[in-house]
Length: 184
Image (cartoon, rainbow, N blue to C red):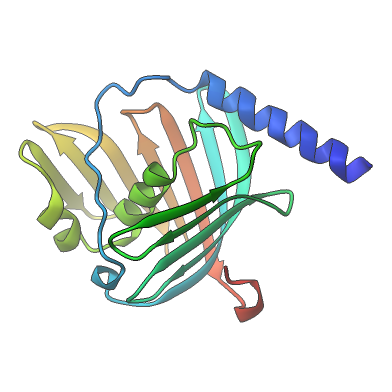
């Protein structure tokens, strides 16, 4: 019963955080939809994700695998899968928990992931007119007509900070190699 109560509380907190997020983005960020192979390597990571919506902060865990054929991601709260994503470069498959707010979109999760990890050349190749990608040192920025709407800072080899100015949230990502037993 205590675990069920804790899950209910965390779901309520996640819902509250999503309600405080802007309902309509200031600008629609371009979808990346990059093929898994364009990453140029395989990955298996455990991640701790900390979302910031205004004054609200929520922490979730994720398991990520990327190989040339597919991206697989599971995002969890208190050990319960909130969303499972599979992307083969053409089709995005999602399995969502009933408690997951509609505002948490798999497409946005995939785009944030690809913006953070994929090579700049792959991202630049799919950007529409008026959009550009700039990299300087440990910072990457997605710009529309010169204004930055999505920023990424590499704090160190295992920590990233993503600032989505278009949708009004920040995301801190801490990554570690995944054990084969915990991969999605």
